[in-house]
Length: 383
Image (cartoon, rainbow, N blue to C red):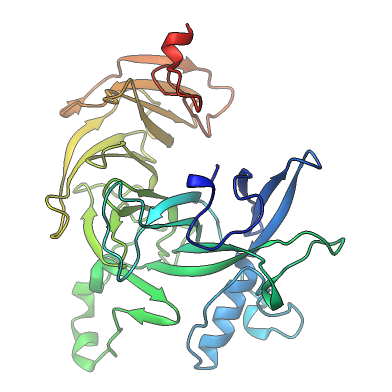
């Protein structure tokens, strides 16, 4: 992506319009790359090692220390001598995206005002992290590459969101900003234990997740309404505002399968989620005046396009300025087109564009002909 207006509020210096690219691996490492026009290549300017951060956090908590602010140059604890982190597995990074116009605590969201921050969003197991980029501008904050030249980027964690079981306070979402966390967890009493059978979360993890950890399979921020949506392994969608408050929990009764992805439309009033059972769910989100809690509800359940019982990996709104269509794709190698304004129970898609079971479809993107090019010329006018 290219940064808005040639820069952002984080104080970048140098070639601020240089494109940025983020990548993530199975080892829990996220890297941010910047294109060097002079060298004609992509250069890694920042690295986030979620595995080392996980071990460091575990070590702090075992010692009774509060969580410390995180940054990209913090390598966490060395592998040697870190007894707390010996058995930890690399966290799963399923969500990775650049976020524009994020309005955090003390900065109320105003759609289109451009008053927010440009951040990097990552996930790790049951966490979503929001990172603020800063290019090295002098002093000890300047990071150098292996050859000793070229200022690199530092990423400071702006906010961390942890997703727990939905019966907990704030629908199971806890937020951390600069080491302070909320909501505060109260200590369990004997009365809590006596009635615990009624409060136990249902099992959803299966053999691969016996501890019922609420994995984040996807996360997406909508600048139109200021809400961050998270698709979770317990079959829920949770919408969180910039203050870390979970303002809505979306779940279909009887749906126990995990949600694999979510997609906002451009207006922030429609949301699509894909399910491991081959279904696609359409939701409506009415934010009202933006001061209260949004009203959300299920608009349609789409089925019949993908092979039953096989996961759908993603969805995307398209179909002109009004985004009247929805694409979906999955492990069955199919890409389906749906009426994005459907209501009720839909038994079949408008069309199946691709159907090849020899390979899965992991990701799809679209550039529509009605979109305006950087030069201000409409693609339709170009023929």
